[in-house]
Amino acid sequence: MLPETLTKPGAYEVVSTWELVDLVRKELSSSSMRSEADVRPVPELLPLTRRDGVRPIEVLLALGKTTSALPGLATAGAAGMAGLTALRSASRWAILRYLWAFSDGRPDLCLSDLTEQVRFHQRTILSEQFGIAIAADVVEQLILREPASVIDADAVAYDPVLGISMSGLRSHKPDYFWYCHEGEQLSQVVVVEAKGTTSGTRRTISQLARGVEQVLVPSRIPGVPTRRIVVGAGFRGRRICAYAVEVGEPDVALRQDAVAVIRKREASTPGRRHRTFTEDDEGYGVEDEAAYFATVDSADAAREVLIEDQVRLHTFAGQSVTRETILADSQSARARIETLEPVYAEGATFRCESTRVALGQRMLQVRTGVADELLVPLDEFAGRDLSARREHHRRGRDGAGYRLVHAETADGQGLDVVTSPDGCMLSVSLE
Image (cartoon, rainbow, N blue to C red; front, side):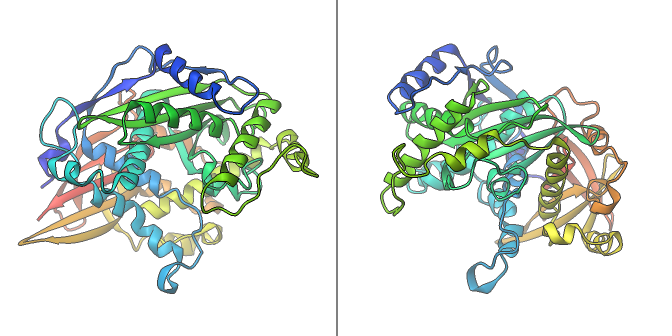
């Protein structure tokens, strides 16, 4: 049985206006950037004041599948366990943590009493997680009108093709990249910085201004349109609000200027021992110049996006993979996929990992999964139009691509699951 609190539709406020833009521009004018960024409202959001009809479980699915898009898959972590072991739990941890975050009341999506009581003591985690969740929901459901891959910018930063110009920015690089496809080619890139705060509107404006600097940095892929968007999640009382601005395409000088400001701020952060960069430093800007003028081959970029996104999908389904194992032969890849639990919904088989949590006399079970046809061994990609396959999962939707449907497990157990247009699913049940 799916908890009613998670399925009851509600709304959150959406703000992307010229008044907001003016406040962000004023905040930017106090920074040391010499050039002026072209900040504007997001066109798709300008006529909106609310995002209606959103279920909390949809926000949790957005958070979970986006949190799976992390780098460092083969790095050893605590107790010598592979970083992947922690990562396989990351998306489920994010979902489990916020199952109780939403109140019963509607029409607005509000924080529950429990979350309200602890939010100021755990403000950083809550703000960051809600920032990611709301940014993913805004981008995928209100801005994009086609299926897209989402990749964490930390993963991109280390990529030999897509990581141009972001080395050395550490936590000050943007958060995520959404890549749209036409057949096997990239049709659009959306650079997104997600912000979140519990400290009020003034702090939100400051964060949006910092986000503008961050989304200016990444290079364009020639021939592929690029958008740069900053989304901030805030709270008015307990009500959730989303704030967003878009930044016009920068020239090389503006991008370099943004990097210089970010690096100086990075160096001056308490506890950091990085020297401050100045224009008088020997060799300053040489590496930057090479990065900003370098050309990214669109075909190579499309392939890298494919690999990174396949790692994300397998991770969300609970499959232990890295870039290296994705490149393995089809037979071994298929054998791994088939070890995952099948769940049947909408004529598709979703391969899932399950997490069980004891709640007194009852058991909470969370399943996160991906449509089997999208968990494709890399050597099977040739000649396959994956954008068309993802379009199947969006078919019949009105642009807001989540759907609550009935499903069954292999042993005939009935489930209510939420599916997304990129072929991911989430089920939460009390037994």
